[in-house]
Length: 108
Image 1 (spheres, rainbow, N blue to C red):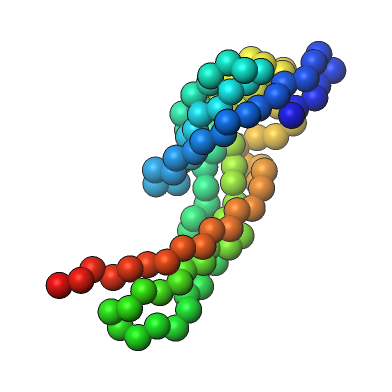
Image 2 (tube, one colour; image 1 turned 60 degrees about the vertical axis):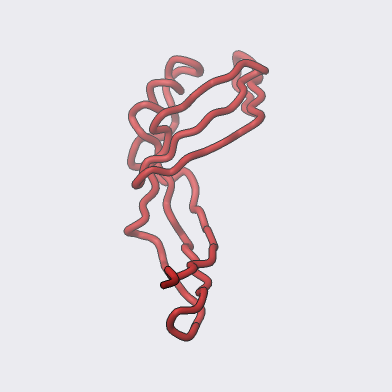
């Protein structure tokens, strides 16, 4: 939920997609479907990558930590149209993300 001087906006049914370093997504804004292309930029090169030890050819756990999330110009435009001047820029880190998964090497 986002509260501003002009009203309250409820965001629900959030879904996202990451292509390269650009995150896009879909959600409902006050019950209306909304698509957001290139809403955020993830600083993957600034993240910390760690792995668990695993013998060659076996699955290995991977972790990404401290991935900075910044707004794209498209998000700034959408925010401005909805709420007015944003209190952040494309250089502002809005959040830090972490992710974890398991890499399964190809089998012969």
